[in-house]
Amino acid sequence: MSSPRQISRGRIWMITRRCTQRQFILRPDDETNNSFAYCLAEAAERFQIDVVLPSVMSNHHHTIVYDAYGHIVDFIQHLHRHVAKSQNALRGRSENMWSSEELSLVELVDPGDVIAKLIYAATNPVKDGLVESVRHWPGFNGLSALLNQRPIETRRPKHFFRADGSMPERVTLNLVLPAALGDPEVVRRLLREAVAAVEEQMAAERALKGIRVMGRRAVLRQSWRSSPGTPEPRRRLRPRFAARDTATRVAIARRYRAFLNDYRKARALWLAGTTALFPSGTYWLHRFAGVPVAQPS
Image (cartoon, rainbow, N blue to C red; front, side):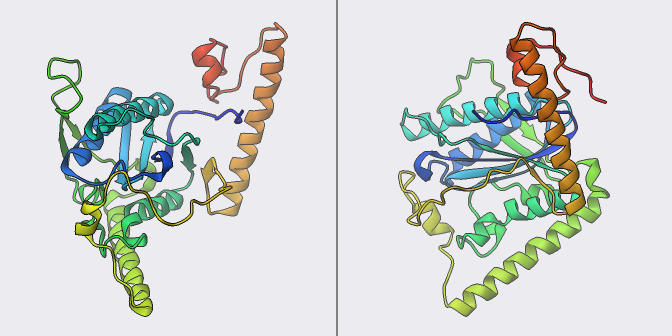
């Protein structure tokens, strides 16, 4: 059983989830790109989540969001359920689409950590040797829309959602830079420069090794039933937060340890039949067992 996660308002998260058996079930094509974008836009609107940057690869996605109201768990469940059902209908499959391993949900603490993860997610297809530039990636990647402040228009996927159902016919996704990051123009300039630097670095490394990228045509030709030929990493760490600054990392670790200590004390009292007040950020027991939770300090 995993340790409880503290879910509080006003936090920035990076969500990562992989397809079962590392299969290319999210391999780019028009319907897949639109379907993921639609499901993301609808879930964000439903649960009042600000999407900062989505980056969808053939067998996983990274999505960075700002959660103003503490709705991240409901948002993730809704998003992944609809994406899985839609892709299964599109691919003609019925088994679980997502890997059975726990998804990665990492709190991004400082502005510098957020920007670093934005660069990481945006340049994922370049660093994996699939394309030379982010703009060449045929999958759903929100970098261009974020930098150019362009709304992403999506339509209800015809292969799954009913025309007479409750899901909207069209949804617009507007990518948002959280105010905590500072001047949006400065952030956009930093992202442009950093992404260009990664593209140049990867091009230089390929030139030294004498190798070429796979290219978008080869990516599009891949079977969605395929998976990477490289061995799957094992025993990977699953961090709960990202903070490059040592002092910040120590402070966040202390905050989480204090939450765990208070949670365990409250849970022991609750199991013993005694009234207990759980610490702020307790989610599961508050949602499904109705335990009282302290207000945020």
